[in-house]
Image 1: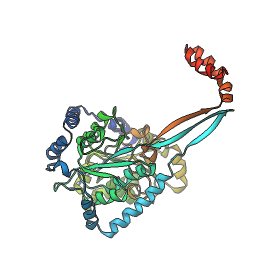
Image 2: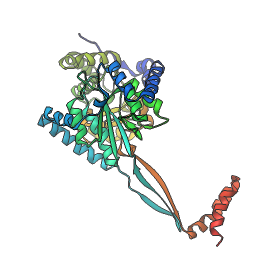
Image 3: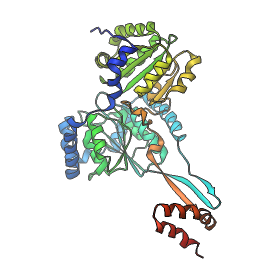
Image 4: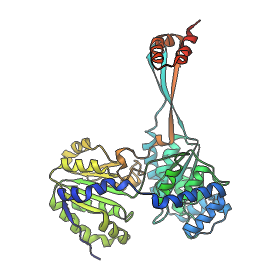
Length: 435
């Protein structure tokens, strides 16, 4: 089936589509909230029995409670099911991701703010983290790497992974191998909102965790929000998206394949090209229309292209940068003349991750460059950063004061405490200086 992509000028795009795109992240959960809330309540009340019930109801898989936990034998069998080339690729990606995330670790530090007054911070990992790895359209061993490696780098004691089983009641071998390579503590065959509830509140089989990490569908996202008063959660991660800023020097073939690479994720993927060249926009439209049917996931690509792809011609790069910052895309590619790359980069305020230059497709960040691919979507890059090692750690302030230091702070503390009417605060200082 042939598709025809429309090319928009900026005025038309701003008046007809921009507000909708900016608001795309405000997913209305009302239609699923009641269902998800009931699932959570039932998991709290019935534990593993509820997990078994919901796995059959939503995934069409009958599984016994004693089989929720993946065994060592299943992991060994998974290694026998993957080829050496997969292992080699996985380990190269693991090496780079580990290097990137170990560089993010903050160490303890102390400074002297007054003579005798030392203040600083120490860093401590969470004891237990829960990783959600989606199932659905494809297995995602790369998401295992992107979530488990920073958890390990942070020093998390126990890492639990949940992911929905396939129709045979098993986990894809690539997921099991990736989890084992990252030394995940335990793997469970459960997905959906029920898995989030189990990680948050625990069951007989699954221990509750300190933080839940990982992308998922609307039900998973709603569940994470509903349990967030009781357990920490990570950043909002919905359908994938890309924005590409280009000038006339960009290669339209690269733009075309990068748009379709995002579109093959999900029909709800957003793909936006902001280019100063109408010729580039026309070439991309023509190339997509001709080539999208060459790919295995052409039906998903076509649906995304028909609904959520925008090719926009702007007057200059400043306009492209302005629109991109308003959109705050998950992935931003900058495909401009090499001498202009740094200038464009310096003006970007909002993006989950930036891919600079013609040899930096999003795919390398998805897999093997080392950066994380769990990124804020739906415009939340205005307020959130991508997943990092520090998401698995907490920072604790430390104050260490000598008697000399306390004397140096006395007048300031007494004056401020008096102003706020907190006389016992003042006494806590004076008592220590009596002798």
